[in-house]
Image 1 (cartoon, rainbow over the protein chains, first blue to last red):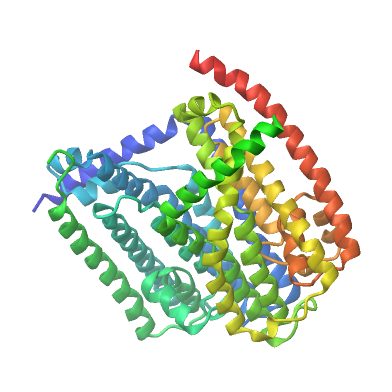
Image 2 (image 1 turned 90 degrees about the vertical axis):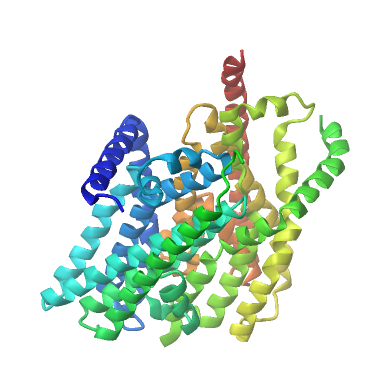
Length: 264
Length: 266
């Protein structure tokens, strides 16, 4: 429909604007970043306790758990910094009717609403999480380049799927007034992703792969780094990602078609 | 003042219960977000699958985290967000006009939610029991007698702590962010994500001296029969001292904050 170069320019401009806005609150940034680090330290506490008592849980040792936790931190940071503020703003815009202004603009509404606001402070967890993953990779000398590549692909496709899930949750606000709680529910489901999948009952594992695909972001890559991946695992991850992206796009378009705006 | 509060309380309760019932669907989702104890149960249960961890079997852990589900639901509240919102928007002004301290109303709101929370929670607890029937054990009467005072103390400490952080909204925008830092510390050190029995020996005295144990771990361990009444009595006393400190800080913040807030409204 539109010239991709123009779209790219629009996105770059919007992101620059939202980063500039976020940078105005420097003290906020420092306070929030520091408190975020403290929260992360507390979240790592149970892991420290765990490995006081045991060398491994169900065959997952400290290195594997560090990979899972590191990827969880990256996912959580990206959700809090990029996805949640924007999709939260859509919910607000639908309620107030200001979504009309976005729809009037000559660019794709999903793209426009996706880059309106960026919160910088949560991003401090990205280097922390990546450092954990990096440490984990360095612990196991024979992690081949292919394993690392597959792990990265799985993590990224899982994150894309989670974005789709969040968009689906936002679409419900076209039909219901209060959906804040639904998003809280998603946050607490994502929380389960900080532990290896085998910890949970079989049906919970499948829920964390298919329904709230946080397992694809955290546990799948950890398995890949151990060399325990096959084409079925890779295909499952990519398939879930594609299903969520296409599905959320379809539902978003259908919801917009039914959106009657505030004025009518 | 107390007499006035006592006369107003029945009506405040009626209002609070009506509001609870009006938003029951929200309440269900809100409670389902509190699944962290179940996640932690899954984790520690896996850890204990090859044998007891720090003396705790899988049944002990299931009992502890079933108790955690209940105690946490009975003591968690959402005062910080609401109060910060009211300060920011000025909605607090209208409430200050009433002849009763606003926190009385907040307290009744939180207490009125308890029966609803408990009712929604019971199926979850039943599921845990169905999963590990071995967690059921004959209760120790002495521990059980101390449970209710400990639960009341935990509720009061949580309320007082939330009030203190809520009052920071008079000075800063990010009162709820600071609360989240406090909460993260609480979650790790109170016994919410890991029973105190799993902490190393050197950490135990520190955990007892901090306010967090009385905010969650103490009533939970009493309900699970994991602490002896004599040491629980000492924990109760430490918790009461912390409660006095929280109330004193809260009262000072309230006086100073109200002066500042008045300057806004003109």
